[in-house]
Image 1 (cartoon, rainbow, N blue to C red):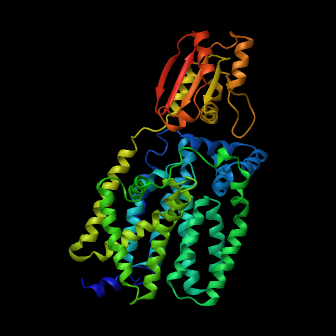
Image 2 (tube, rainbow, N blue to C red):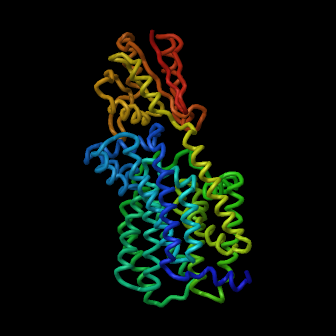
Image 3 (tube, rainbow, N blue to C red):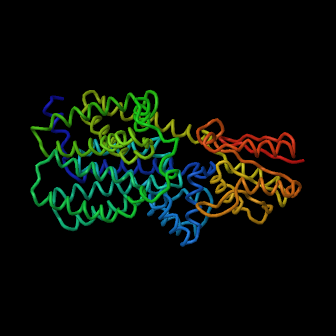
Length: 493
């Protein structure tokens, strides 16, 4: 295909596509649904999902306190949704179902957004890559806000393009409202909003449009202030976690693997991204509208990571999952690359190969181990006697035992838990030491739950040497059971 044809191919031919495209999109959505609903409840909840359940079940007054002093405001919309959702059930499958549904809905939504920015073939390729994306499937099967926020970011991008191109007040209003919802679904979505506005530097727009962008941006900023002030209100330990990494070259390559897949998949994705970037660059002089569409994709895909990397030079926050909201843009860029590589169907072959290998990776991922709080909790509850003591390191992992104990409350023994409630009061390790000093025989057994064996999480909150020595002296060596990323010690006869 000649260069001029490649350049022109980046222009949307029509927003609706054709019946064949919609049929293929329907099939892709069905495949996406199967991948996200299969094995949805097969694995235990992990620690962050346990926090979701706790916030969904706590009282409104406690929720309001956590919203103001803790991190609940960072995912407000999702937690409010889950407070209503848990009324219908609390199984792992039910808790993760909203994430799966938003993940499924994001596949056709990406195609709709893609048709605003690229030809039907490129948009369809992006939707296919999202349908089979291991990262997207993974977070569509987690009781957290990531898939909801991705859907809202897609909706925000759709209304942003409509607002700039058509200038209708209702579209500016929708962009503003959806942007606020996206921010309060996850605060890192704000970086996508910044990327959207920044893309206008690559387009000639009227002063009226700039005024509307600034006005809507100010409205979103004012609405976001209660959430943004969290960084000033929260305690230091709730802002800076030692497991948050800096943006090293190794972490940047991990981000490439996160977006494109691991191993060979990453190199296929890189080839598609380079082809997409070259095609966008060639439209700069010949087609300003196509160039802006392309630079919106590029800004959305790269600017959030760049900003996060800069911030991480001082405050490490370079978490892959916090940048997942750029995933749709990276897949749109890959779809554009696949579309321009039409000679000998090279682009289609790369996209199909990437989707096939990604689907295999997703299926294999169903069987990869994860924090097995279900088995650890059931092991304790099945063997514990009434009056046993349980202590957790770190203390907040008690939310997992609370969840699984409440699931089968009638069969659960009454235990004395030495760990504060989630952002609430309660006894801790010091109270256990005092109790043992007062009456060494009052607990038939003492159970110690250690999270994150051989990990930073474990090292950040180990059992104290004083407690370990006292339990060893009173009960002798413990019985030890290992679960995925969890160790359970049982002291007592």
